[in-house]
Length: 429
Image 1 (cartoon, one colour):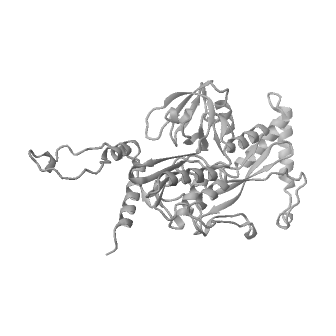
Image 2 (cartoon, helix red, strand yellow):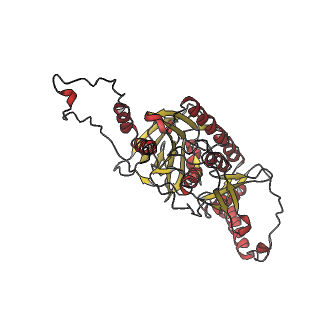
């Protein structure tokens, strides 16, 4: 199970069931063939009674039962979970794009609370917290031995209040302490701008229910303002996922037809296909998708679909590898069950689970120091040189150099798209 601090986890690639479950669910034929484990149920009841009677302090039986439910789901996989009424409310708020918290997604990894990704322009990202940072201590409490739920509850609090976190970064020999102020997280899931050489840039930080519409709006605006748009970089780095429909809608904007993704549950008749409709908004212009280890779930659906269709080059680092679908099943008491019900597959039938999307062009983490080659001698440096007689073309070296220093992966994507655009402009022999 994962969480965005201050709320329950985003329903990564989630389908939500609106109606409460029947308190007397009908068993399918396969389930009827299995005997109810009466001996194990009796053992559970005996343990519960022993705790109630003999434990050193009074134990709330209702809390014990809820803990048992949580433990049962945690044993299934990292993403299935019991959601209390408050957690269920938080989950629904998170997909609307506004909530209170710190703005980072965390999971339990090897017994430690670990950051999956910080969200853009949040207290976590501004404090420099990075993916794979391990949280060791919250205020004065060590996290080792605590559940993920307990850690998240400690990180929650009133907007404007502070929390001190001790963390350990991969490759660092000593812990680092940061103090963050809780804030109202308003997720701006889509933003866009123009890069040098008429290349557009579109960043999706999280897939929400309105992300498809917002991507369409901003992409249409980019095309209207820049009729000579030569290509687009779609940035999905550190995007933890979100609602499944958002990923499907975004993929559909760049595809003319074909399968986007399909999900498969336990039986063959549970397969669901999601196909693209006609109309590539970019009309075939070159497309590059940036990914990294913080790109998960819905991000991997988009990257996998565009990669399998040969519609985009995937650039960066291997993605997180979350290839399962969670269904949120409301319960009778306003709580809910978030249960893994299927795996999803790319159009070519690849399962991303625990493997991720492998980039077409890998780019390792790099620190760039830009050199303008000051020692070289050119004709223009010679005394009394002849003038060119024509206006010089604008030099974009300064802009691209600044981009390389700020974001080397994005610089590499820009270089790839520039090369594709120039090759397409070259006249045929």
